[in-house]
Length: 157
Image (cartoon, rainbow, N blue to C red; front, top):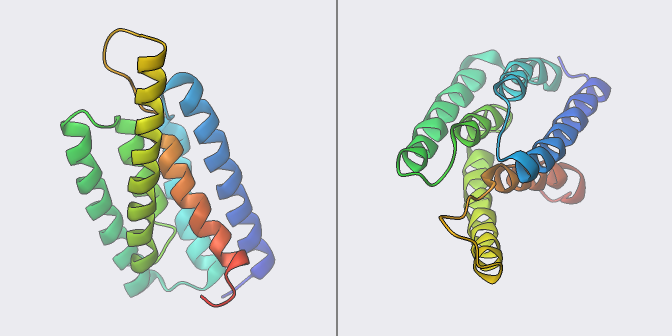
């Protein structure tokens, strides 16, 4: 089944949620488990609305999301990001096909690199002590918003 109006509402809610996550992560350096869970649980509703087959397509997306979780868990293990960031990336991966999820990881990494440079520069300029903390949820939200925007801005895809 495809329901374009409902699908657009779900994508719009996801976009608004990603913006909200970025703002909250900037302020508090936390991402709520409830928000991550809501994003993950809404993905099958999106699949149904957009006509994505639960098997095998949905199963593949779950497998890719697990791979994204494991990849980002390594970054968590080495102290490069928080647990909420890892869960957000995995939950967001459920919304996109595998190729787009790979692009999500690349865009997130690039945005995260730029964000890290900005945070480090600000940290040094303000002569703060200790290790700077990067709100990596901002980079993940950027990657997700970029992919969502492509649906409307890139008519060649």
